[in-house]
Image (cartoon, rainbow, N blue to C red):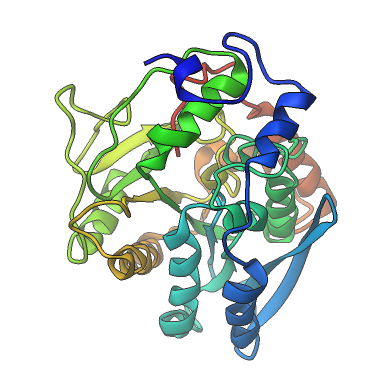
Length: 353
């Protein structure tokens, strides 16, 4: 299947310029509302959590305030957990699952962990049911301090005062049929590369960090989700979306190298969930429930197995005597994130989370 026949923006073999991005942008329609579907639920949670405005997006006259919810009585003596959703705005259960966790389960962890939840990282994409932001940039390839996606740099700034406190980061995503019908063809066209079709797995899976694998942790999450929905099998090559399956329902990526959201905290326990909402075997509510089950299982495991040294060894380079939130630690985080700046990765072979 050729790129030219498959995606209507751009010239085959030529990366997009400003004109092509504007043409692509003109194809995007507002299909739902951040201010009606997300913000009211955030506001209702503000009676129990600190509502934190951590960034502002201004795109062609449309303005979005980025909000996180934080444990009201944040105790630096407790381990912290970061939950992110909606990095890809079209992945609905990531947003709804994060909110549902806060509404129904977060109280169970009061006095046990500090929670920081950014439920809708990419509101422009949420409204257009799109993977990218206004600038046709994938936020989940640009989680680095000097990156071009404001959605991503805002989250990095949000977590900076809590440097070294995170024991867990779980990033909530979906893999959808539209990855093959729209978003990967758009990626190939944008980058001037040929589109190479792939397979969409039927079921839930996780992405572990190949630089800090935690197989027992991943399997604890898989076991919990398997009670809610089915787990994706490997394909005939023993892969899921082109990556080797290393355990039941688990693949691995180098999170920091690829600029992925789940790599920003240096937490010992990290994972990216991937729900399949287009499966005939799963309802929208099951997809939300799978995300919630994953968050709860991840928290339970991380709290039961945490050590005095909360960050994994690769994160030690950005620790310093300045203490949590100190200036030198923030500076070293910036250096660490730059070291993790993604190199050249082919658009057709790049992992899809």
